[in-house]
Length: 170
Image (cartoon, rainbow, N blue to C red; front, side, top):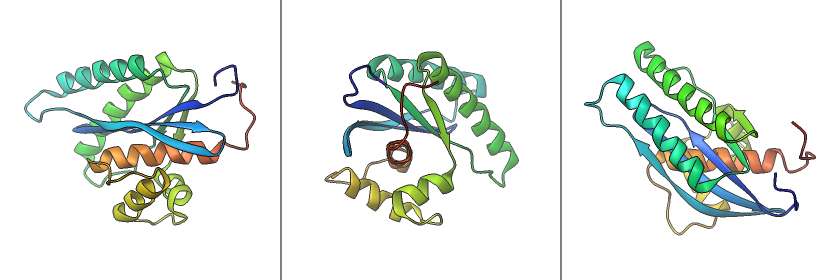
């Protein structure tokens, strides 16, 4: 957290292999304000190594540009497709390493935690999450791609989860 107890920037990340969603919000007291959101997309024609390098480079660019005070990363939901699951896990590892190197306040949340916090329902579907993200952040339209909305949901989850916790402790 910044030293003045003022607003903090929270970067939410929805890790993926083809698409890494990101969402940056500012928390000032109980107010949340969207700053930016989007996605890092890797072309399917690239090799696994090239895609992981691209994710790392883009993550470093994002982290350097936004300099978040805290980062919230969604944990993996185990996929039934083992090959895809391994690639997503590799990409998530790159995301975590990039974030940990550049920010000492890194938090991880399960999909259930994020859904429960943002919608009040741990089994909420994508549409319900998108609706609540749009409502909470007072956005004119639903964030696209879906991964960006999921990343904003992770940031919102973090903002709500830690609001009663004293900061500054590692």
